[in-house]
Length: 118
Image (cartoon, rainbow, N blue to C red; front, side):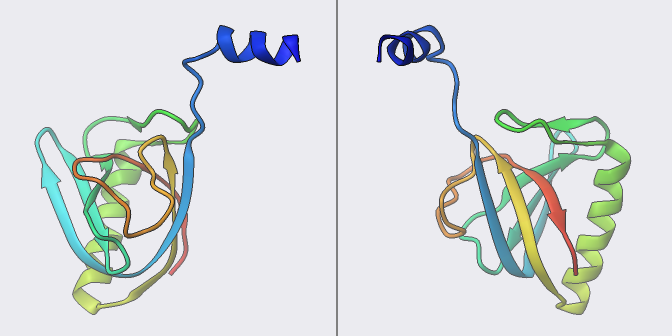
């Protein structure tokens, strides 16, 4: 018990990142200065920042990163999915800003896309 209390007091900055799987079609794709890409799927209530077209993307709460090259490839795939109204299947979001449900996103939040397959 004392050891657990010590751990909790010694590391108050630790947070537990969220992981969420959302699905649907691409409702919106946005670009926001400086060079950040935003995505909103049909199952999501808000658009979320997912990568940067000119720099490595990382968010707190996850070790995953997205390179600028991967971001540009992702942007291309998302534009194609939007233009063809293709279902994205399941998209896995990770990070401290990730809510517990797809319709629980708050404004101006960021996440890392770990995986999707469509």
